[in-house]
View 1 (cartoon, one colour):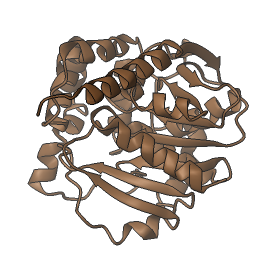
View 2 (spheres, rainbow, N blue to C red):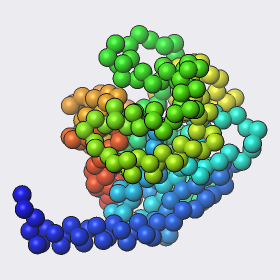
View 3 (cartoon, helix red, strand yellow):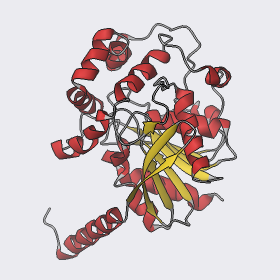
View 4 (tube, rainbow, N blue to C red):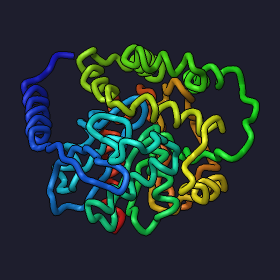
Length: 323
């Protein structure tokens, strides 16, 4: 279809706006009890805060097209790099590089505390979604609204491992691989190639450029990346010990607590890890204040990158309806 002059001008205007807002994004750091967290900030410094959390293997660039509409609407948009990624560093050189689900969630709460954010909205995917789930479940007074990309992902790490279907096992082969020393060595030696393969497998209909991938792959050069990734995937199936300080929290999470905050759940229809069901009536039991469940066609696992407008519009919708 030929592009009209009006359509061209509209597209050019949108691109200029995104470029302008991107130019206003600032890289900052903040110190928590455990980490020096690097984060991207845009929007009004006095606006209501929205925290956006990336997953594995990704970084803050995942939200570069989600943040501008939120910043334009007057919100303060904060996109931290998770432990083990990009500029984020452990304060104690001797501290074990652990990354169980409770730790990632506590990092979110510590981040909010360090920035003096009594309440905030949150959206995350993959690891970031799990952290957002846990923070909302355990600290509902802190979370005004949430957009959960991948739904409910709190894990019961205390239960024995169960049998799974061959198809499901095939889709999460990398998790079993990381529980071997060969998997660790491969991630150490060829993290860029391995993580790129995961992008291709998890979002098979997304044709990202080498430039897009390379900008994020630089974050995997963090000296803690391998240790953090390996611990995360070994701890969740009982092959690595967790931190003693999170023992009681993991017991809470093993009960699969409900998430009471107003939320929208979102899924990529072509997610290569697990394709979502068209309907999920039981989801309301886990999210009593579920506003909507959305399966987004034409995208896979990296929904904020592939359909950023779906994520930003969902967050704006929730914030307009909540106080």
